[in-house]
Image 1: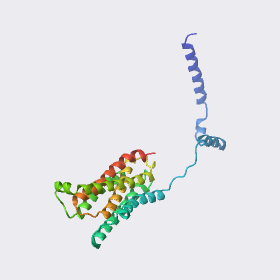
Image 2: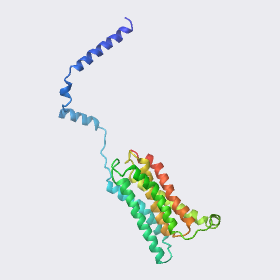
Image 3: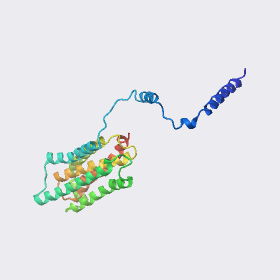
Length: 247
């Protein structure tokens, strides 16, 4: 028997089976629901190896984000104290910190409080991720009063700027990590953008805490030690969020 004969036999059997399938009353079966016994068997087969888990509520995630972000700024103030000279300087620092704390809460609500697909538009969240750091730089520029030449500043004040910048970066990283962990595996659509917003929240909280502990009016110090760190946290949050926030 040639090799073509078994192949022809298989095709003939397949044609018979397809013909039998065509004879089934598909128009009646299309709207028919499976019997309870079949449904129970399917459910058992699909859930046999699954284990129940408890999902964290949105309110709890927001609360954890606020604790990790505002807590980082508060920890800096408690550890180093505030160094504002005079009641006017202290009142100005507190008003600025309070205003930016409200901005951070708004970022959490717009960026995370609703489920993916129902959050604020990607365009609005992108504007927040890039626009708020720019506004923060403008805020620092408005609050600064002294501006030394850059060469003179780096020669005589770079040590303090590096120390303050390192503290800001460490606090911002800690705070951003807390926000990212609170929302891990929750954004299948825009994890990079959500990570940038988490970094923004963490960076702002650290900058505000350092701003109370180090209320300098030097423009270079404010920009390099307090402001650049916010941008660094946004970029780092975007890179980490791409992996951590995606399911």
